[in-house]
Length: 151
Image 1 (cartoon, rainbow, N blue to C red):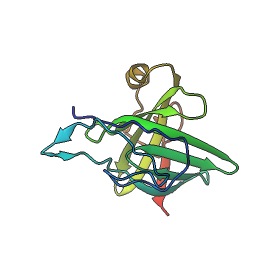
Image 2 (image 1 turned 90 degrees about the vertical axis):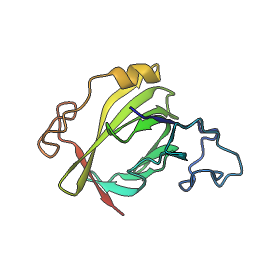
Image 3 (image 1 turned 60 degrees about the vertical axis):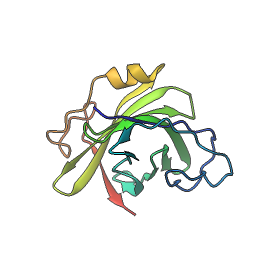
């Protein structure tokens, strides 16, 4: 399994940073990323998305910002794995760790917040995973997965 680790140094909402660039706030983001083939692995779901409950998601390889008007939840990505399709991230709101998983059904992207409120990244990763077998029908902590559509 190849993981990419990142450490964010700011708690500001900023546009998604490109690998190797600053976050727009002037501070450098250090990354101890796992190299694959001589380059840094990039999270495959980077983009601006809307889900089925009117939530907006701004995903970069450093953070996942979820806006559910009026609430905003910022998660700083500790590491991710494109092969097994999960992200482990630390919440800026309560400093606990969460695991987000994603899958596709056809071309539709779905995500599931399968683990929340863990004290360590390892505990979040080890938490029970979601079942991607029927994302529209269930398998996400007793509920359907949330579809993500590009903005």
